[in-house]
Length: 117
Image 1: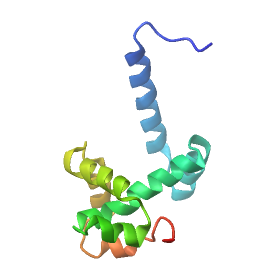
Image 2: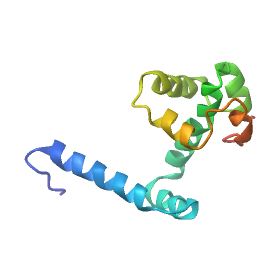
Image 3: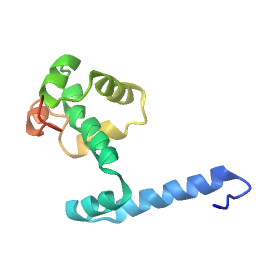
Image 4: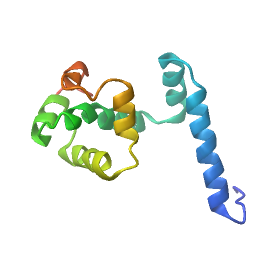
């Protein structure tokens, strides 16, 4: 049985901080990919790829249906990402800016998450 501290929020906060520090310690795409392979299920990785793939399209102001047609990501997921871009913590937008994905042609630079069916 897993032991829990008296205040579970302290354990959770420490674990989340430790995870963030582990992510920041990785130095290459290959290292990050290996870490994500170990950390996440294939479905979790796919969900993250889907979310990230639509960010530049949303920043560029493309309509949800057009984003869906390009990426095959569900309109529901696109809407959730859009809500995070507008009301979230700012992580998507900051990462997109740092990678130059907030420029007008950036969405075209991304390969779709999966081929449309």
